[in-house]
Amino acid sequence: MDSIISTPTTPTRPHLTPGRPAIATTISSHQPLDSSVIPKHSVHTLVFRSLKRTHELFLSNQADLPPIDEKLEKTCLSIKAHDEYFPIEHLVEETQKVKKSTVKNVSNDETNEMTIATENDANATNGNVETEFSKIPVPPSSTPKASTNNAIVLSTGNALMQRKQSMMPKPEWHPPWKLMRVVSGHNGWVRCLAVEPGNEWFASGSNDRIIKIWDLASGKLKLSLTGHISGVRGLAISSRQPYLFSCGEDKTVKCWDLEYNKVIRHYHGHLSGVYCIALHPTLDILVTGGRDSCARVWDMRTKVQIHSLSGHSNTIASVECQATEPQIITGSHDTTIRLWDLIAGKARVTLTHHKKSVRAVRLHPRLNMFASGAPDNVKQWRCPDGKFVQNLTGHNAIVNCLAINQDNVLVSGGDNGTMFFWDWRTGYNFQRTQAPPQPGSIESESGIFEMIFDQSGTRLITGEADKTIKIYKEDDEATEETHPINWKPDLTKRMRY
Image (cartoon, rainbow, N blue to C red; front, side, top):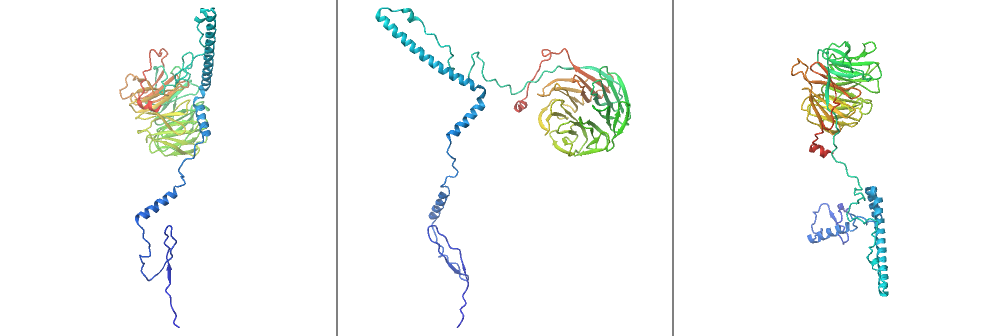
């Protein structure tokens, strides 16, 4: 009996037609696909079925919002009204009470008038008419009538709600500053200044490699310290120890003991000239920066370098230290300002708003803010994240130095000898002055390299290119009438406020 070899068949997917049972078809693998097996439908039928499926899909109305709860809606409106009109809610209640009492008084007056009229009619009929009573006017109600205006007004005529203050704050008046004293003694440009915490004397460093100490009250020379072999670029006086720290273009950082007037420590590590120095107000550390584009943190006593804050790509011209975050702020000729984390030894924020080299950074003595000066403009920032506050434009010069006192007076000194005095809050420039040149000096020697306020904030000390130190003070005779505020805010600041 011959064996019958059957060809294996491959089951195909049944064709599903909506509304019809599935038809299972088996097609041999060696036979071609028969098109007559697949049912054909018209375009109208296919479109209708697609519409039907779409209708069934969205029949539940899932996108519709739930019905509004009236109770919750009233609660929400009452909370909003209480939050917005809380200062005058009691006045609205009083007004409603006044309205109710007025309506009651009016109704009582009408009933009284009707009673009087009926009595008069009865008297007239009886022949005992008293005309005097009919002429007596009914006294008006003592309660005030409700105002028809939307605004609620007091009986004195003043508005209940306080009027909003002006969106643009007016600058505070500051007396002008005038030159008080000129101190001469250096044989080179005066590049750095520092005031003693006791406010009795101040120190100055110059390109003649000498540090001089002057009496603040009289301006007389008290002491000269020699030891640097190049120009002195930075000074800092400790408030806890009798130490004076100095740095210069000879790559050295020195610690002077003011009890013996001698150098007791050297801090080695900088690869080029050191241009700025700052002391931490609470820790025994100092920070220096210079031409090697690196800010170095030193232990004051052990002379050990704690951190090497690298990140700038050009000379560090200014450094500031404070107790709060960020503890170190540096300004560089690479047009950036960096806010450093002292614990991690890394940059916390990098500010790139300036377009030219940042030569001056100064902290506010009372506020958690600081200012930076560059040839493009002076900018104000807010710590700890370096949030930009405002621009102080108008000082069209290379700004070498800044100074801020407790009375919110910001002073910027330019490379051409100009000094601009600003109101810190509004950025109003209330005075512009040109430093008087020293007799015999040339015109190009009129730059201001450093300026600092004394501890009281009433004396401004400047170090200049004509080898002199000038001391300024406020004009005691000036008043708001003699020197009025000529304030014209620009549109950008108005938009900012």
